[in-house]
Image (cartoon, each protein chain N blue to C red):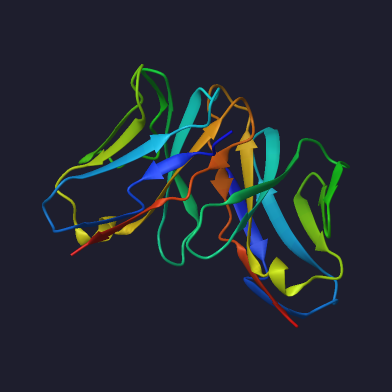
Length: 111
Length: 112
């Protein structure tokens, strides 16, 4: 059973460009979470999704950030008009119920 | 708001020198407390879930315990390969909110 998959593993964008991060949950997992890890900071919750529904987006910045988990395909975290402060590691986790299992992360660098 | 504090921030041990990592938490109704291990450049690796005070779980050289205010991760006779950052997180049971609130982690270095 493959683990949580994320791609790309590394992403470089210039200020003002868009970043799209993808997450494929473990087979049989219907819950997807996105977290952000800044240098010297702990993991911070961003959004919780189930298929075609956003359940909790209380950790998402109000502007430029959006997330989806369509009926078919991976979950997408989209960051529009990136700024240097968006540079971080973005982790996706999936869950069958309680425990959350994390992917390897996407490291976003904004030049 | 749920809060997690881990201490110490960093810990250096000699191989074979047992110790404990602390995780203090406040949460409005605990659904679960989680321990993860994170190696540099990788995602957190799930270790344990604890659900209620008094519960203990073990895996190889690691044992996690839980009280109403804190959790400990005991490391017995550590080896260099146990070097990593150990993360503690809590999940509340209010409504549909199942997000994890993490501490900043404890970086463990084990010298051979």
